[in-house]
Amino acid sequence: MSGLGRSGVPVSPLGFGAAVIGNLFTEVGEEQAHETVATAWQQGIRYFDTAPHYGLGLSERRLGAALREHPRAQYTISTKVGRRLEPTGRGGDDLADGFAVPATHERVWDFSADGVRRTLDASLERLGLDRVDVVYLHDPDDHAEQAFREGYPALEKLRSEGVVGAIGAGMNQTEMLTRFVTDTDVDVVLCAGRYTLLDQRARAELLPAAVERGVSVVIGGAFNSGLLADPRPGATFDYAQAPDELLDRALRMKEIADRHGTTLRAAALAFCSAHQAVASVLVGTRSPDEVRDCAEQFAAPVPADFWQELRDAGLLSDEEPS
Image 1 (tube, rainbow, N blue to C red):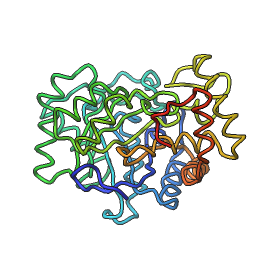
Image 2 (image 1 turned 90 degrees about the horizontal axis):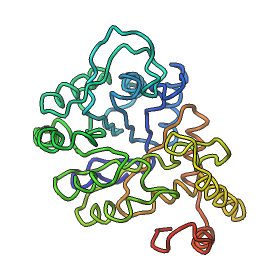
Image 3 (image 1 turned 180 degrees about the vertical axis):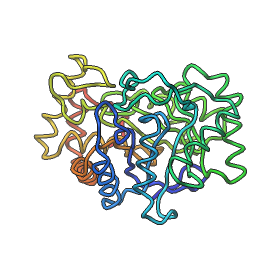
């Protein structure tokens, strides 16, 4: 377990991303969701990440229920603020926002100080907890002014009061995350999909800034939503059909992995975790078998010759860790 920035909040090297048990795209049954979290625990995972956005609170409720049987001091949990859930009577489902759940609530963007507090209080109620360890500002891409002027100071106050142990921001881009690292006193940033075998945008500024400032990085989207887990025609990259060029790169990587007796999944996870700034890599899994596979792939050594052949083939920069 390593600590997040200067906060010392511990996280396991492999973390559990709980969006999927919030019925991301397709339904996951209650029993299966519970067993998936239980299997993550059995595999040694002790860092669990969720958000109100995931299934309109379903992810938080399921995760809190599944972790209730374990001593609170033995795991780290993070949630997010910025999308406040408000009841709605419009009916229908939430698939337009990616979750197979009834549209019982609507998301209201709110990075105000009051909104941060209210959103966190509601999350604690859904989780059945009196505290969480880490709180991220969630996707403030179009709300930068309010996030920096009101949302971040609100999190800083919560941290100083001891309500949360570590604070940060979680996004799918690197530019604003780099600004959080350089211009604020965050402990951690969650970077989704921007430091993978196929997309290394975090390499240029975010990761060096994090190292310089002593800020930890948590990596999400290590498989770029599927392409690096199972490259094939129709596979997704960042939740859309992968372009032919990226599919070709992934297939070439998989061929090289096969030749070296490893897997592309193992390489994808090893790549993300190798950088000195990275404290944990989140994986989203919907079944016990998927959890076991991710834990097995994460623990598997990846031969040095594999990385060298990727470089020789022009599929990996010489600057990348291995």
